[in-house]
Structure formats: structure tokens, C-alpha cells
Length: 421
Image (tube, rainbow, N blue to C red; front, side):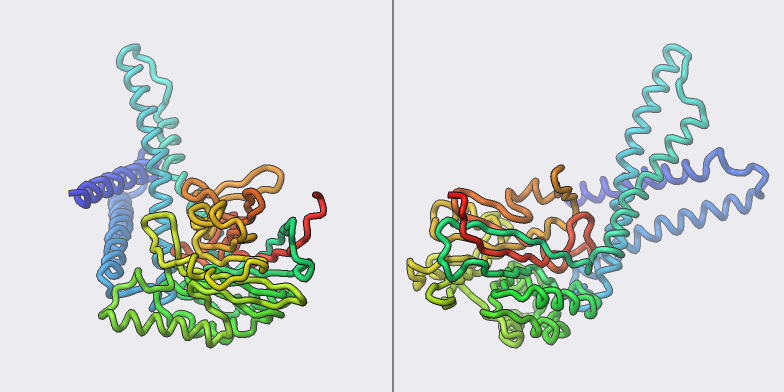
């Protein structure tokens, strides 16, 4: 029943937007001297294109819903999905302004009925409908710009983290974090190589990867193994798994296929020389001090995401004297199990949100993303008491192959002793 209601609303929107476009662009403003046959054919072609795209949308949806085509296996397919995404964002924007326009004109007709006065001439009415129809171009062009300009526009975000009791050996330690590669969404390799060059130019002491290496299938990462194998770090590269890495969102032929895929993903971390932490910890000796790098499997406080993480198990062998940092993919884990409950974890590193790949960040003014309506911590550095959380905006993208206002991130975090005490 719910699906039928959705279909009814969907086609109601389609009919409304079709009539809005037709009225706006093929109304009384057309040249009356043009042959009737030409006007007729023009409108026929308009209808064929409009409804043809609607049918194509359902065909594309059906091919992927029934597993006939999956964009993880056909990377260029992500642009077909993106086209329909942009198209329906534009239609929805036109729908909203179109409904407001109709309500306005309905009010004008009511006034005219009772008083004989109309505030809108035919030309003004047509102008309002053209404006409503063209309004969809605003989000369409904005999102198209984000696809063309920003998907590989890697940006280094730098932050100093002030620690009260920072061990002397960790002073000025440079940590580079990347997250959410989503290799199955990438079509081009050369720009990704530039990201690795940018990481190495930072000369990091430690590199952390906080999950979602692929969209679903381990083989997505194969073309990029030689690229990410080039990452250089004084004390190594440490990684954890994200919710997409388990293959839970793909229709496997058998459970054996899913297990084999997961094993291939684990082998991929090893092939790149990354130390994958699965509810484990690793002690890094830095001078006379110890840095405990703790990594948990995916853990989310939101019910729609899996909980494989076991923080107690990961910390079981961590000495109290070590300075502790935690890698956990989902930032909701911070409030759920870390803040106050595990106060000796100095810094938590997460990703997952991508900053929703859309929003704005204006220094000194403010920032916003749709992610702020779901996640309390969605991008950048956060602090509660003496504990820090850094949420990386992601190196790749998922679904929409672009970014608007929230650029792909390489984080550079430098540990400093707090001298303001």
C-alpha cells in the first residue's frame, strides 16, 4: 500500500511539472503565425522527451533494484544515476515554486470572483509560471558544477590539538587522516594519485584511514592498490573498516561469495601495507613514550547501521600509561561509548558522514550541511571536556559524484602540549 501511495504521488508530481513546463513554454506566448503542424510536432516531441525520461528513470531503477546492473561493477553508471538525481532535484524545485504560484493565482481568481479585480494580467501569470518552471535550473546547475569541478578537488584541513598532559615525545606529532575512499565510485585514477602526493608532501608521522574503502565489492579497490601503496609515513598507516566494507548492501549469490569478498578486502589492506585494526590496538614507540592506536570495527548509535565494534576488546591490552587515540568509522560512537565512559581516550578519529557532500563553510560566519540534522558531529574538530573528536569529510564520494561547498578532505592534525594552563 505504501508503495502504491508513493507511485500515486510520484506521477502526480510528474503530471504537474509536465503541465507547468508545457504551459510556461508552449502557451500563449508562441508565435501565432507558425504553422499548426509545426506547433503540434514541437509539443509532441516535448511530451516524448519528458515521458521518455520518466520511463528511462524506472528502467534504470529496475535494473539496479533487481541486481541486473550495479554501479560498483560499472563505474560509469554512477553518472547515469547522477543525471536522474539532478533531473528530479530540478523537478522537485519547480514543483515547490509551481505549487506556490498556483496558490497565488488561485487567490487572485477568488479576489476577481468577489470584487471583479485581478492583480495578474495574462502576461504576468505566464511570467510567474516561466519563473517556477525555470527555478529547477538553479539546483541543477549548482549540482552539475559540483560534479564537474569538485569531486577530485582535494583540500588539506589543518588543526592543532591541544593536550593538557601530552607526553613529551608526542609533541608536534603530525597525524594525517583520510576516510571514505569509496573506490567503486571513482572513474579516474590520475587525480587520486595527486591526493597521495599531497599526503606524502605533508611528511606525516602517522597516517590513519577511518573506513569505507569500497562501496560494496572488494575488487573496486584493485586499480588503486598501487596508488595508495605509495603513502609514506614515519610510523605506518593504520586503518579500520566502515559500514560499506562488509558487503552488507550488495545482493550476493551465496554467503560463500560474501565471505570471499570480505577476505579479499582484508587482503587489500595488507597489500597496501596498511595495518588493519579489527577490535585491536597497536603500541607505537615514540622515543620514551607510547602511543596506543586503537581500532574498532563499525559501531553506530543509529539503528540503520551495523554494530560490529567491541571497544572493550580493542582496549584489553592497552597499558594505562600510553596516550590513546581511537579509530572508529561512525562519529555517533563518540557520544555512545567514549565521552565520559572512556575518558582516557584523548582523540577519536571518524568519518562516515562525508559532510553530506553538500553545504557551506564560511570562516567567521558559520557552516551548515544536511548532515547537521542527523549528526551532532558531522565534520571537523569537536571537543567535550578534555576529549577530542575529528570527523573527516571523506576523500571520495557516494551516490552523487560531486561535492558542493564540502570538499574532499585530507586532514592534518598536529599534537601540541596545552601551554595555556
